[in-house]
Image 1 (cartoon, helix red, strand yellow):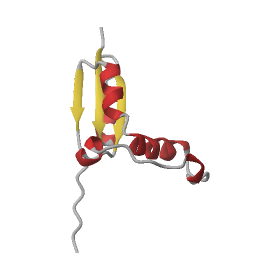
Image 2 (spheres, helix red, strand yellow):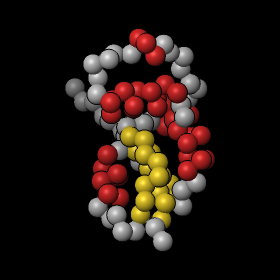
Image 3 (tube, one colour):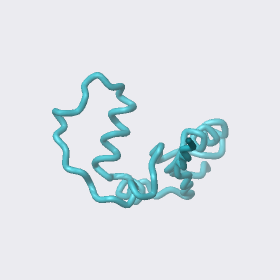
Length: 93
């Protein structure tokens, strides 16, 4: 039986689980998400004003950020494992 895993984090974390397909099933994945964004309230937006030129993947990420459905999706997915790998960026001048 595969371990069901939810990943909230970076692409690197997802790649680790993609390479070990025999042991894990990724049931939820949200990438490049900060803890502040994860815990924030939903943002009101007009769907018709979203840029129609962006890729499906980028549009999906933007809508996930605005709707704040990640925590609800996590409850529904009921994973065996939860990996929180928050993206941290440092800017140096």
